[in-house]
Image (tube, rainbow, N blue to C red; front, side):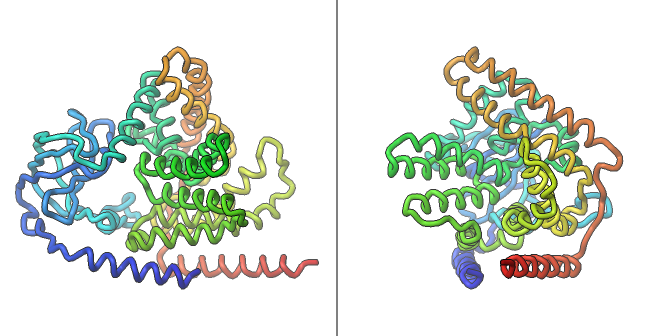
Length: 432
């Protein structure tokens, strides 16, 4: 399987080099004021006072990140004329004295090589993008509109993060509290959140005849991935969900390791640069590997913890993922939450219920807002509790530590991890 991944990486590099014959015609205009006509090629991300979107200029293989005023709002597929100074993006420190984030390479993996700030924008047309993606984004906008009309902030933004990975409107202080509490993963549509959504989508269509239900379930998973922006984490979880559906359809046993390798294979073939420059891709796969290989070890350590209310499962999942991803996080971000075990135990049991409540609020909102009221009250109570937990623990002076780990130490630590896991599995395999 490793050989297959290596071959897919080589194929992806060849595909990129063949497709990347563009001469970067915009390079000569860097530092100058330019006017570019083109199309918004991704869903705009709204912040508290601004919006940001990916812009594809006509006649160029490169893309531009445009930072504009919050109003007027734009959407995917809008055709615009954008006038501002064309600049290269710059790397930045995650914090003062912390590790440098390779922002240039992170954007370049999606063919984004330039930025434009505070431009003068003239709308030239609408609905010039992919019609399926446009329809999905409009559906998501309507769905979130019903939630925003029914719930106050920051409750609505938190529900948007849980269900769809939308956290742009979440106040910065609340986002910081979640980060310092070790709960950012519930705001960015993590693999576990996607798995919950995919599992429930499949259950809905299981009421249909088997073959039709499986096809509809698979299609709904794909459409959900597209609607939420198809981030690396979402794609990885969606591909694994599709492998589960396929295995059930042909009556084969589902192997989670093979499913993970298939997801890696497909993603690297499509874009080999995610392997080196997409932190979401890297962190998602490390976390999944932790659940596969480290969780059994931690389960053995925590056998004394009662299973009631899912306490042992939450502890095992949290400890396993934190142990295995800690070196990578220290290398990439230079900060680790020291209270995340406590906050995850307190918050994670509420997440699936809050997701269900938020989904019901948005769904019943299409019919009549009064039908959604019972779910609004229940979901608001859960969200208020979650915000209270992070609001208490996040600001504590000892909630997060700033540490860093270089690449040599990273290699050594993960080599020791692999050796320890191999010896543990070998010991268990030899037991009678």
